[in-house]
Image 1 (tube, one colour):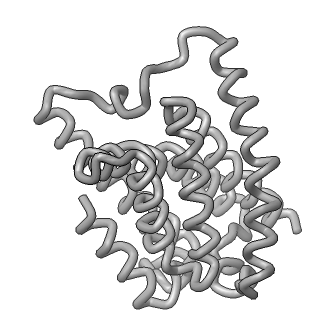
Image 2: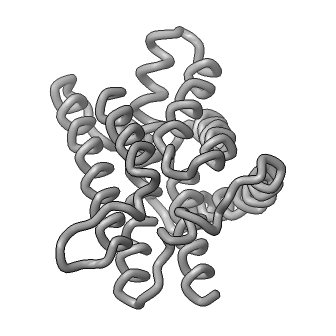
Length: 212
């Protein structure tokens, strides 16, 4: 599973950012969104096949599903609380390392209504797929290999940051975000709060950038 993640990370670094992706007839941003969507869902399909081979399901990684509205609001509250702590911390780290969020990353944010709609779909995809990949399957595998859940959380955060190579130096705060999301999943024994937090952070970021 590390191979497709490594390939995706190297590709994004080699082309100096996803905004340089291009499909004929559509904007570079839409091309970027489609590239990420295909890449992330392809990895999820590989995970689904691996789990199916072992007689398991995607739900076994997520740790169940919501049974009541109360459970939904509980996880949503945890997600919002997580963001209230994590977002300012990550902002300080980005400022400290001098990361450029107005370059390639700024070019990645939506500029048209169509791009915004697809970006929000991308945010939902990132929330589900990336948490399933990194905090779910990868952490589970690393925990089995290292016999240490904390080491597994640490390593998945490193891989998570490297997989966002198109962010340049900002990938280091993203590693920290991966560690925080890993600790949240480890604490709650569920991916649901992290999935909500991840999707909300990306989605709100896209909306704010669109109207700025």
